[in-house]
Image 1 (cartoon, helix red, strand yellow):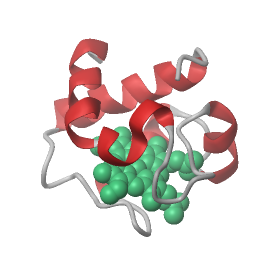
Image 2 (cartoon, protein in one colour):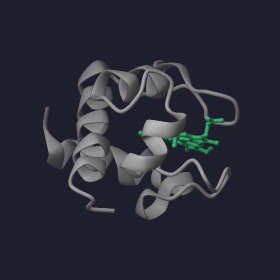
Image 3 (cartoon, helix red, strand yellow):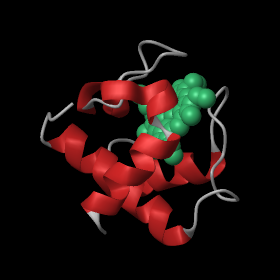
Image 4 (tube, helix red, strand yellow):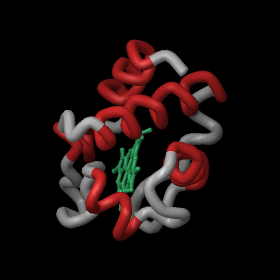
Length: 88
Ligand code: HEM
C-alpha cells in the first residue's frame, strides 16, 4: 500500500485523536508497537489495524463508510510502518 497516501489519510482523519502516534482520548492506547501489542484486538499486525479502522472500537469511530478500501489499506500500512520502525 501507498505510504504517502496513508500519511495523508492519517493527517486528515486520525491525527485529531492520534497526533504523533498518541491517543488524546485514552492516553495509554497509543499507536506505538508496545501499545498495539498490548491493546489491539488481534495483536500487532496490519490486518488487525485494518479491522479496527473499519469497525472502530469503544470511543473510536468506524471508518468503513467514510474511507474507501485503498485509503483504509494505506492508512493501516502507514500506522504499521510508523510503529514497526519506532518512527512516531
Ligand atoms: C485506538 C487507529 C481515528 C480514537 C486506535 C488503535 C489504532 C487506531 C490502530 C489501537 C491502539 C491501541 O490499542 O493501542 C486509528 C486510525 C484512525 C483513527 C488509523 C483514522 C482512520 C481515531 C479518531 C479517534 C480515535 C478520529 C477519536 C475520535 C481512538 C480511541 C482508541 C483508538 C479512543 C482506543 C480504543 C479502545 O481500545 O478502547 N486507533 N484511529 N481514533 N482510537 Fe483510533
